[in-house]
Amino acid sequence: MNDQINVPANIKNKTLRRFVLFGSCGSLNYEKMQGLSYCYAMYPTLKYIYKDDPEALKKAVLTHLQFYNTNVMFTPFIMGVDIGIEETQKRTSLKTIPSIKTSLMGPLAGLGDTLLLSAPSAIFGGIAASMAVKGNILGALLWLAVMIVIKLLVIPFFKAGYSSGVKLISTLKDQLQSITGSISIVGLMVVGSLISTVVTANVTATYHSGKLALKGQEILNSIMPGLIPAALVLLVFWLLGRKSMTPVRIILLVLILAVVLSAIGFLG
Image (cartoon, rainbow, N blue to C red; front, side):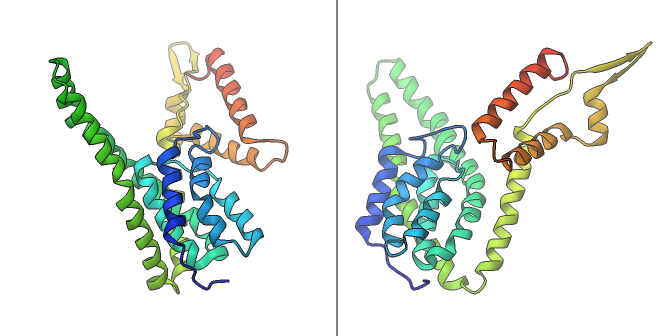
């Protein structure tokens, strides 16, 4: 099952075209973010890689339908890495791919948002806007040209990712299990850091006794900063293991809980 198969150029180009046409945000949702779009773009390649193994194809599709979210322009790089590994390892790579995607999502999101979104918008957007305000049509053309150049970067990014994936397998095949474990740890570190930076829940409840006032958030911070966000994440993780709970139900439950606790003055 581990004999290498070379994905034809027309299949890889179809995958890239699907990404360009629909993009990673083509089906953005709160449950999987860009996961559905990523899987849709990858599907032609997955069908070719697992054409002789229908069960593995089903598993691959489910694997790529999981949560995915990063800067749109760097998605082709991750897809290239993905294809480079899967065409060599096939079914056995499906344990490795989620960890690799998770470890790349965070760093590439920050890099892409800075280099391909914020910086061009600040530099070329400012120049284009100042020219357009003065009635110079070159302002609009300049911005259009910059956007086209940035969009065309998906091609070299895809090729670089594919080359990296192939090299990773060919040079580090024996160490792949150790690499997978290491990448999983990095992925968990990224998720852990997101808990303290993205999830916020400030306790506004205050206990008064005479002139003494004990603020709930200050007490919790003295025990463990970020205790409420951590407890909330653990609660959601526990609920995900219940058969009767779905991600959508959990989201609604968290929303209701937040509204109720805010209404009674416990959270702010």
